[in-house]
Image 1: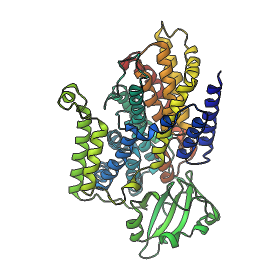
Image 2: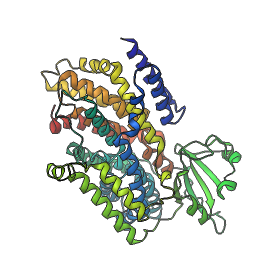
Image 3: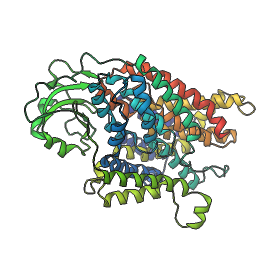
Image 4: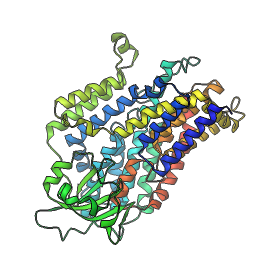
Length: 531
């Protein structure tokens, strides 16, 4: 191995250790790795900052605003309000009624706002109908993940991979493979729809058996001692909460927000004893007493990931914004789907009518029609995610420049020496690439996992002299399929806080689903995309 390979490998290992141990936010960890690669002359200054101007990364930022506009419109509340059954109740029938619709919605919207809106509504509905909420909330999160793998915009991971492909096309990485193209809106759906449907069938059938009933340490019923004029609420702390690392007593919630903290839940369990002396961490869920002014002031803030009135089902909003939001999202999807067809490209040779174009147009229209607060629009964007994505592009380029990607790729190919002459070798390599990406996803973040796996996919395809698209599709599926732990995907953390799940609950239900998605991905990708 050359010094460049060893240096890059060391930087990647240090980065992974820092991400796994959660030393700092992912964005600053990846930026530190980029600076080290820059100091080691593995990447140039232009390559270090290129990701910040990548169209895929900016598209992710725009889709955050589109999702915020849809969330504010009330259309999602209306949908789930209509879907939740009022009679003939059972766990299986209820999941059959709303999980497919949740997957369809998450195929076109960011998963996090979908779960933030649906999770408390489903929990409160289940409480009123005497069904255990824990039978529905993990399936809710998993359904959004399954829906996200079906379209280009279903999850930021897909857009990141598409952005890396765009970068590769512009920089000449695919000069020997002119057939490489950007991912279409529904290209992932060729295999993704089969994976999604199979996963939903699994969730609908096993939810009542593998998922737990109500937990004895749940605080759902603790509403009798709420003071007059006050509302009992659950709030989930985000990474922007200013009191992280402080105890509740040190931070003084009442002085900052006018609410009193009654309990704290961490990793699905109520903190016993002197909870006021516990240092708060991101994704903690607090039970608080406050008035309506707290909800009005902080509902749209990114200080709290979620604010939920305990025991109340939120009623749908007005009809005007719902129709505007629905129309804009439909036009965005249809426009992005048809915009890159041959006929349209001939009519508009100077304007590329892709997802970036239509997301930008939709974002501007939503701002001017008041779909989200134009004075606070920066608060609706997850900047740490964007920095993570931009830096991941540079790290991916560093793996290519140093030769680390080729080195690892050769080890993967060595697992299947018959790959050139046997289809079985392709399955083995897809399986190896999938497992590497999926392990990264479970331990770190999905976007970083996709960016780290991208150069490996490119190296494998170049060595074999085949189209890299199937390997890129494999990365998209593997980086999104985070089911076995609550830490791999933010929606899993959200439902863990709302539902009070243990870590083992995710393993029990998610590990079989991981295996199902893995097997389907490995066998369907060669069938639909060819190798």
